[in-house]
Image (cartoon, rainbow, N blue to C red; front, side, top):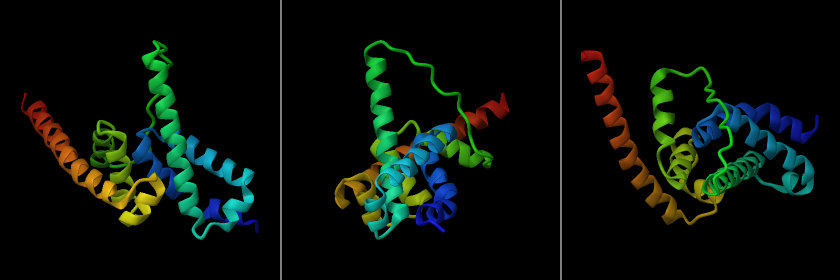
Length: 166
């Protein structure tokens, strides 16, 4: 069997789950992971030379997601209001959906660090490699991201309790 196909079979679902936490939209996560596999096919030698092909794909997918976000933001600054893809979510428990929704309110660097470290279970040095920043930067983003996320989840929890009592 072809190595790319083997990696696809073993990693696709896991990569989509990891990128869902970064993108906040299942369709977008599927798109960026698919784009990473297309690039792996186009750059077969680089892909096959990678020590960890899944990490190679994850890095490409994160970069594709970043590029899409930057282009969308630039277009919006110029006054172009492209229709956002309809939010789609995998079948997850409500608490996981609330977590991902809260993460979307964080700055991209913090969101990427939290998703890759806590949801993808990557060690800090692999998060640094996947995002192209220093280990110290990842640690700072994780610390700030945890604090911001805790505050967001706390306010969401309070709002949910108030809705139940109203």
